[in-house]
Length: 114
Image 1 (tube, rainbow, N blue to C red):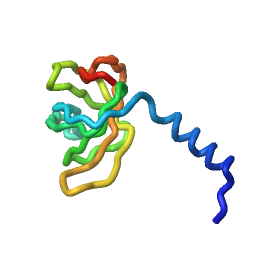
Image 2: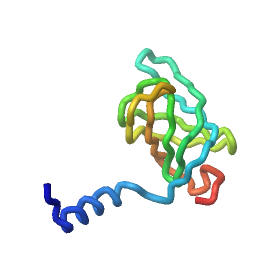
Image 3: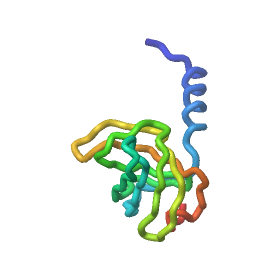
Image 4: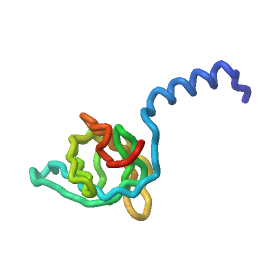
């Protein structure tokens, strides 16, 4: 299969626009909370795998849908923010991979130089 250089550039532009900010591998303790379909408040504590000023990648055992709204608390700093699941990756033995975007990000939310 032959792919033209122009096509590769267009693909790169498309995907480059989706990612904002510098990513950093970082293990930050967090708490995620959300309202379950039963009406009860669910809560799980986990660690981030990757952070950037606009969100994080995390792995949890619960299966949640894209666009699910959450409350995310950085347990290291005590900062909280509304968040939404924007990416659901593969299920691993330790749980599901999720990309979580902060709704109103504070650029110092993680307490790291990003």
